[in-house]
Image (cartoon, rainbow, N blue to C red; front, top):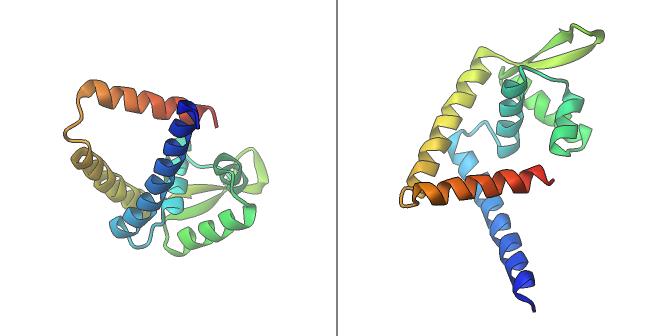
Amino acid sequence: MSDRDQSLDTIQRELTAFARRSRAVAARMHPELSLVSFALLAHLEDQSGCRAADLADRFMLNKSTVSRQVADLERLSFIERRPDPHDQRAQVLHLTARGTAALAQVSDNRRTAFRERLADWGEDDLARFAAYLLRYNASC
């Protein structure tokens, strides 16, 4: 096996472990917010709202999966539907005050966890790691 193949295998294995750990940690940080729910709320906040179909496209999820997630978030009063100002037949999803508070709480908890986990990393290592993650995600 070439060095490149070994590196690719290591990256795949470590990203899989990271994803599994992230799901487990998300459940501990807020029992009502899965990792997917957190990502959806964060995107709604970043975009100041969007349609459910936009969420499905952005996260490459099946529309039925997004529909279930949206229903759960509505049941928790974390999001609400509003008429789309550009198309009255459509609805835009927005965070509620409760959703904004839950997202802030989880974001603070996650930031603290990352600070602790990466406490012994130097500034250069952190900057390189952040740049590599941005580059990787931009290529998807």
